[in-house]
Image (tube, rainbow, N blue to C red; front, side, top):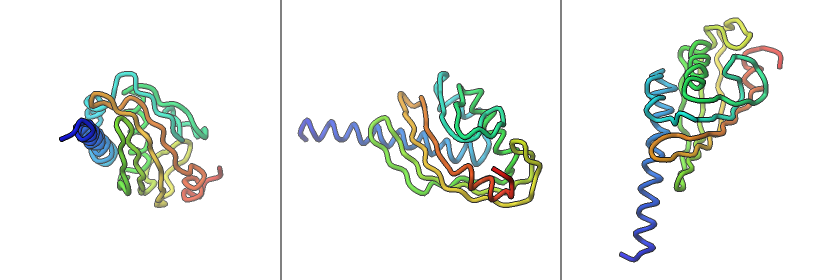
Length: 157
């Protein structure tokens, strides 16, 4: 095997490992609500830039800081949508970056942001770009149409 082949093989192996970390995020953390997994697969200094604030406010975008911030964010969504389910539609990795196209669905049965439960079902597609190093997610940028979410909840944006 050539040097280029060895390097490519190592990159492919790293990409596969990083994809496995993100699969755990979607399946174990988001779908199953296993908040303890966050301590295993996220760096202490983790930063997420995404719609919906950790404090429950409806600002367009903001930062979720650290593992505890992520735990609050996951709890916020799982409280509002107890049956929430994330499907990974596409996952692509290149070295330390993993891009995930996802769809999430759930029924609004609990308090979410400033909105009382509506009983409405939401279905939204989003994109997440994560940076993974040494088996832990360091940072991520995630987008979905927050306005569409509010429309599906019959709430004003």
